[in-house]
Length: 242
Image (cartoon, rainbow, N blue to C red; front, side, top):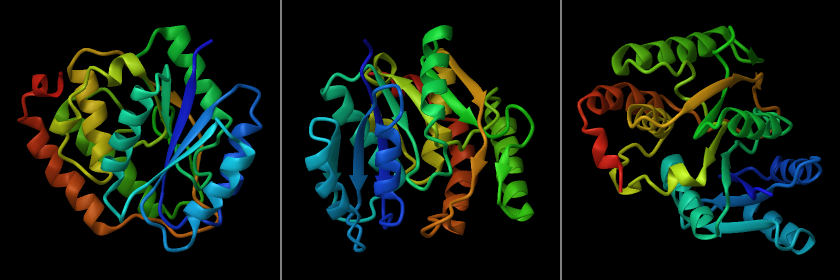
């Protein structure tokens, strides 16, 4: 049976972390979880440590010294999961904006379609976002359209953070070449996977804005993505292969 693990980067997610961990471990399919905590001062890591006693061998924690960026958190997690031999590696947020039930749908889509990566997409079937103000929906939707225009990529939800990867894909990538540390990391990963000829597909999900905790979005994140996309267009993608 394929081994599956969910990576969740955290910073100040004490309101959500125990709930999301228990939800995933109650799914009918077996998933392990790796929490990457960037020195949350609210005690997020302490909650995970307590739960590790209850879910021994299924729940893991990697602590880092500060806010080092979403992209570096995922790369840290990818390397850990590859080293531990997991077959399928997932990205997911801690705040329930991604429905944990959809982990099973992402996995099934990867297996049934022999896909290297499956994206839980807000925009591949209309606009499936709940509780966002219209300004943020428009910014996100047209931001993805901008990325598609510049990079010529077929992926509709270029900034999506709900993804299933095969280990066999990730272990072929040279993570040292990845330049984005914020949400631009999500754009860069999807672009290089597609450009290198791996099979990436999207399935529709419903994205629900967080109910508890504080959003980590900022104007700097969008600026990084806007200017980074232009630079990415002119990078040699073969550098990303080991």
